[in-house]
Structure formats: structure tokens, C-alpha cells
Length: 127
Image (cartoon, rainbow, N blue to C red; front, side, top):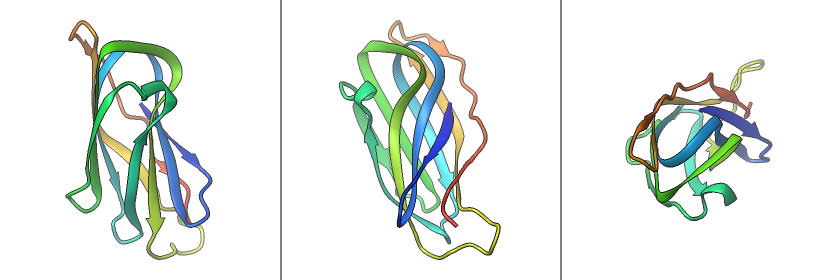
């Protein structure tokens, strides 16, 4: 999984995508961010995951847990799973960027088999 930054005027918007996956029917990912710089706003499904149930748990500051589940799996390369938005609380120092990264991830196929998953580096965006 990787986090891809998308331009946002008042904060940071990112897309979490599966770089390459087959028959994905479930996902659990933990996104972490600097709570002094960013505030979590929302996480929503993408057109690829529109048929999935999803639960978003932002209760712990600096961390958002997102769970996706479906009976039917989806496949693709650079497959967007969720879009998450963060508002900017304060600007970073010159040259520093606010980041969002995947700390942990678990993927499951429609046959309830684990799909190997490793989080890629952080996505930077808001200054």
C-alpha cells in the first residue's frame, strides 16, 4: 500500500492505494500523522471501493484506523482504496512538510486468504 498526496488548499488530501492486488475483499490500515500539525477531517471510499462497507476510527489523536470489507473482491494496479483529508493546524518550518503514512496494514482476499502487504513511505503535502 502507498499514500499518494493530492493537492488541497487548506490542508492535506491523500489517497491510499494498493500498488498491485488481486481479489481484494478486506483491508485494515492504520494511518499516522503529526497531530500538532494536522487534524483528521474525513476518510471516504473511492469509486473502486464504493460497494465495500467501511469503518473509520479516528479516536486516538495522530492515528486513524480504516477497515474495508466486501464479499466480492476487486483487482488492479494502483487501485485507490480510500481518500483521507486532513486540515492544517499550523504551518511547518520552511522546508518541512506535514506527512501521513501507513503504520500497519492487513489485506484479505475474497477467499479469506491473507494478501501480503507492506506500507510504502510517507506522503508529504502541506507546508
